[in-house]
Length: 111
Image (cartoon, rainbow, N blue to C red; front, side, top):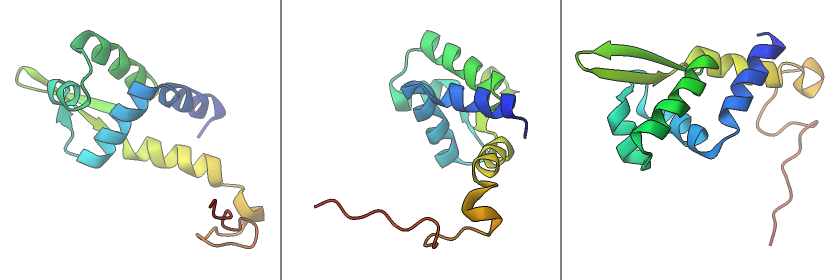
């Protein structure tokens, strides 16, 4: 994945409503959800939702399809995995990362 595409994706997610929308779509799964249902679930006005969906679409993080009079949005899992892969490709000196790794010890518990 190119650096510019990663920056666009991370920039799109660096806003509270868009991050919530994307996480909601990831939870829903590949079948996606109608824009109106997303707005209802997250209490986002239709005009604001439209703006946020446009930003996520331009960043390649969501896909859309028309079903009758509804626009169905879904998370673009391939793009999400590409971003995660880009962020972790040099992790741990090129070795496969695991949840507990010598290079990345678990953080200390805060009491």
